[in-house]
Image (tube, rainbow over the protein chains, first blue to last red):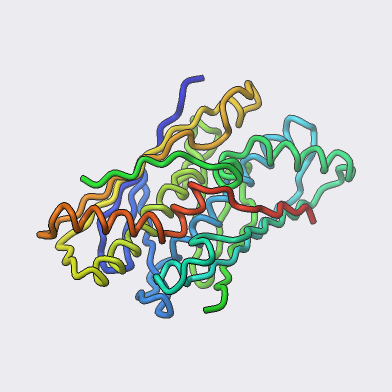
Length: 144
Length: 144
């Protein structure tokens, strides 16, 4: 298959808020008051964690179908921690972004632990967001 | 400052759809019909691009304020391409995720090109999502 192209666009509505459009969808990204915003939407780093949960959800079912695993229910929790010092320009010791992300996949299923272990490995191997987090992604950062 | 912790959680609503909760916010992630979904929300990889736009928005204003740059308007566009072959398990030649992400920052301002060039460099250096994309991020992928 040829590459799929994805695109989003937004215009700043405040110093922390932007409404992003992706095809027919639009959603508000903001910051809580503790990070200088009006708290009118989840913040950028929460959207990153959500993106990861969404991608793992799709891959989990796709691969479960391939392997004959029946999922009665699936819950996904994603956590991460960031040291805000670099963001605020106070210190450059720590990295800017998430230092560690923990994803917890909670399936309700009768599948064996062995099969679920293979299922998990396959999800990690084929999930786009997992790849973009674990491995460096080339970014072309342009100033118009 | 000590680390900030962020957390999201969701339960699968279909084989492609999940409503993710982040604090008091919740939003739907789905896939278009071409990727097997019902198209009730932007898809996971679009949320990743949106997360990047949102983060750059916050950093752009924070650093503009520090540098005395007045932004009359700011538009951010983010694009990326993915080869779906690995996702669908058809071929493992290409990586699973975005092969390249292009971010286009379009400020309306009277600031000089030299100052804007420094502004751009500082955004790249301090933006959390930019860091998590450009550099490997440790992920603890747990199966409950």
